[in-house]
Length: 117
Image 1 (cartoon, rainbow, N blue to C red):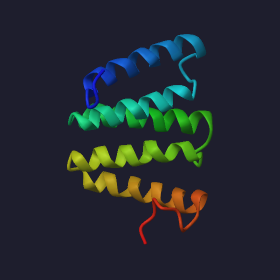
Image 2: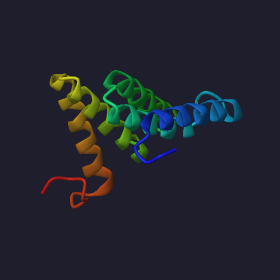
Image 3: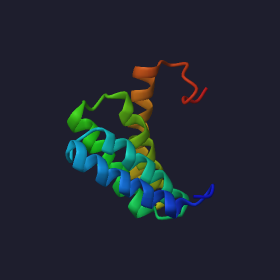
């Protein structure tokens, strides 16, 4: 797979997801990590609807398996908000961005590099 070959990456992530689901079950947290990676790849090729679906899946799985404040939920939130923004759904994206911001501030501290100055 060459650098920037996001369609191949999506296929690889799908195969990984199938493996993890068979090995660990449909609710294993590793599936959330794979889904975030898939969402990022879908965003890179401009398929924002599929990206959004993968980010939402990851977020719900993390919230179900951990909690709504689990730190590994942040990438799913940021991806979800970004996909919504790319789909010109700013009224839906802004609250998700705000939720991610609050979680970053709470869990990572006010001086974290992800936060604006």
